[in-house]
Amino acid sequence: MLIARELGCDRIILPKTASALSAAGMQYASIVSEEAVNHVTSSQDFDFAGVGDVIAQLKHRLAAFARGPGQDGMSGHSIEVLAEARYAGQIWELDTPLPAGEIGDEAAPNALVEEFHRVHERIFAVGDEGSAVEFINWKARLAIPLAPPPAPAVDVAPAQDTGSPTGFRACYFGAATPVRTAIYKSADIAPGLQVRGPAIIEEPTTTLVVFPGMSATMSAAGNYQLQI
Image 1 (cartoon, rainbow, N blue to C red):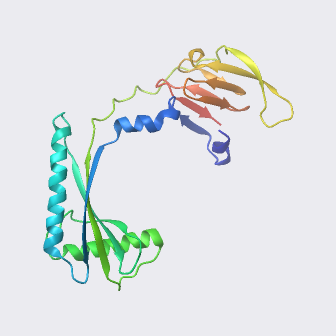
Image 2 (image 1 turned 90 degrees about the vertical axis):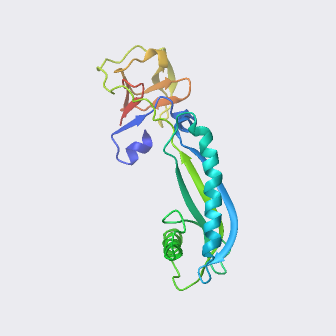
Image 3 (image 1 turned 180 degrees about the horizontal axis):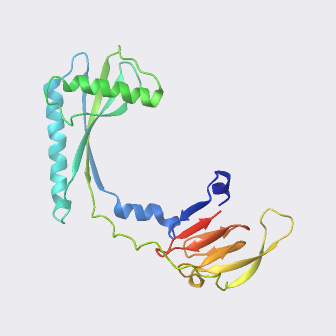
């Protein structure tokens, strides 16, 4: 809340399960599988046929993987093809997307080289379009989207007066003397209830400090709307 005030924000949303968002995200993130093959070639003497065979091999491996999750009703997967590329003599490679996803014609290598120049300039703020580009490894990345999460309830809750806290505690908020601070448990707070600071809300997965002059209101979806 103090950071939000410094940034000039007057209202922010804190999910009830904020401390577990990374774990929750794993339940909604796409299933991803990646295959890679080493095949060195250069923009000066590009191995058109060899790279085409490598990409076909990578896609074949991923297609076999996709048939497994696809049996559970998942569909609409996508495959992205990338090359680990570098300027000749460099010691690091950059993941460079293959614009068309395959080496379909003689123009594809040129498009890949131009894409590498853009990637290099975006990352290092400099490019060297006169230099040869070396392609070291080729990767294909499969993404299978999961079913979308259920739509949340409409986030509207009737306003309520400040409810009864579980207890009180002496807390310090930057001053030399402590302040009598209301302590709320999650069971004390219903949707629409406004908790005015100074207060502390103790949730099973997190602790929310409501500073003096600020407030927190639980929404209908169970999240906290913080008023700075």
